[in-house]
Amino acid sequence: MSQPVLGILTLYLNEKKHLEERPIYQRMIAASHKLGMQTFVFTPQDVDSNKKQIYGMFYNPKSHTWTREWTSFPHLIFDRCRIQNTYRFKELLKFRARYNALHFLNRPLRNKWTIYQVLCNHPTIKPHLPFTKLYSSANDVHLLMKKERLVFLKPINGTGGRGILRIERMAGSQRYDIQGRDHRRQIISPQRIQPSLLASKLSSWNAKNRYILQQGIAIKLPNGRVHDYRLLVQKDGSGEWTVTGCAGRVGPLRSVTSNLHGGGEAVPMMKLLNEWIEDPEKIRTVKEKMDTLGIETAKFLEEKYGALCELALDIAIDRSGHVWLLEVNPKPAREVFAKAGEKDTYNLAIIKPIEYAYFVYNTKINVKSKSKLKARERIRKKQSRVTAFETLLNLEDIKNL
Image (cartoon, rainbow, N blue to C red; front, side):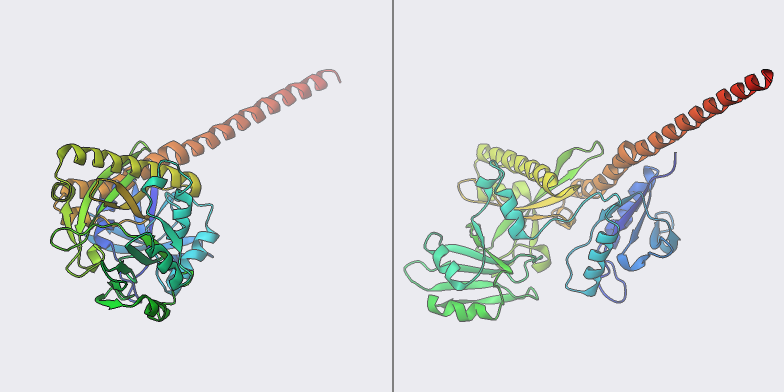
């Protein structure tokens, strides 16, 4: 049996060819070696289509060194590429289109607006979705503000809290309180404006058809900092969807988001739930709802978009204990568990995709290879029998001469 080979597909962060998750890849490669699987890292820039080879990055866990080698295309590809506004991302799109027939462990999802529309079709997921619509003008905000006191304006392809605005209707006043982060993730100081000034305020954001407007969920802790939860669901070594873990995130002061890259703090889930809800029975129910929602969402999106192997769900829980699905991330980071002090969960989050890749190889790719070999053997035996029969016929013909 040939050795399974996994290629981790990523993108360089800059022209110096830096990788964002190099320490994670090192751990994944070390785990794959223990299973007898070879794993290397590559980007679309490392592919030579004429030679049909890849200039891959290989890590040696024993010497802790990286080397470059020309290699064949892998049996499996684990796509870890995140959205970039660069030529490198355009090269990724070309790679996916050209090599679409390769065996990817995970396929790309669509933008936030499309995912919301898809999830609305699932009867048990829909009640967990905050009302969302595609933004077209400031009038959309005014209309939603008649029903909701708090709304969020988010880029449909944004990550890390960039470009998010929180708009709240002030109690006892017609004014709006606006806070958020700009496109460089910098905190925007709170501003209170008249509703009539909102259109001019948002004009510089070029938000039409590029942003979604979402019902806001009140998630401020008593200390004034916002919080939410990051739930990670992954396929395991048996090919089944499982909940790997969940951690809490608390945003810095004056921030409308809790993202770690924006200065957020990771906190154990139970510690945060005990502070937010307190009632042990309600906490148990909330946790069960979160886990069920995570598995159902993963299964449903895989039905719609094809192969997936992991998803992170950003979840908010209101004071009543209702679970809200804010966002789905198909390329989740794992650091929230390490920073929350949950080392076992962190290690599981790294190892599970490798175990799943090994499962896929042995149950699909290797089985197909064996089937092809058996088919070839059957054909060869059939041809041998035909040849032997033809020889006998020829011998009979010779005797009758």
